[in-house]
Image: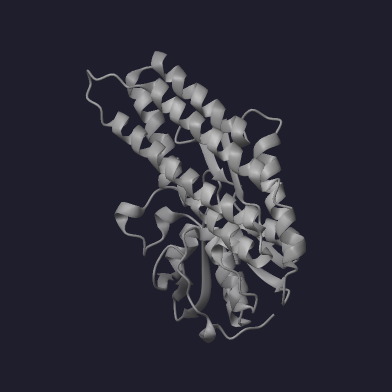
Length: 334
């Protein structure tokens, strides 16, 4: 699948993986908004994974795992993608150059910390950042990074470092590109499936660490912080806010993206229930932001001030109640 990369148009997006896929598919002729990419991939979720550690703290996820958006789109709308990993950095760089020489635009997984165009204050050790490489001039790669307003560049050594960093979610030089992109989508068929899948997974997951049960499990663990060391309790709460608001788009951000998807789907299908659910999901996003603010204020409390762990937990449980109503509404939409 050859293409003229000079015709590539950069798109600024809210989230890296959905932003890359929206740009990539639009470039190859299938125009999909970022919310539509996110929604069709059934990427909304919640998971509280105390056995997976990031910096010594449990992983808290507000969307499906890295690469799930790519795979979700393959399943829902029938695109075909090649995903390639490499054991040696040199082989990964040579392969990237060969794909660019073929005229392809290429998605890549990388580490935020080692990308030279990121301001220092925005860098952190997150190895699942997605970007799109659309060209190379001499030793500099031309990059469309969805979280930046304009295109950026990185030299060979810097990009190779970012693509082959070690650690949790190590990218291993992952490259991906489409080998088949459909020209149209049967929305009447795929939208109900994608939406129902999210609603059922959030409402009915059997494990206590995922979906709405996962949100309530996190609330229980927040209450237990009452008996923990104060410093640890503050670190734990700070970690929740960081996972929610700084890594990826965050908890509220993903709810807003999904609300936009539901609104777009309601217009395509002329479905009033989806439109109502979209407004409810926007309110849920607002509640997640209020929760983050409540936690942030508690972290800044002085040494002799009491942290109201119960109030924080209750706020989280109220969010679970709100989300429950949205997913039940969605199950009545078709």
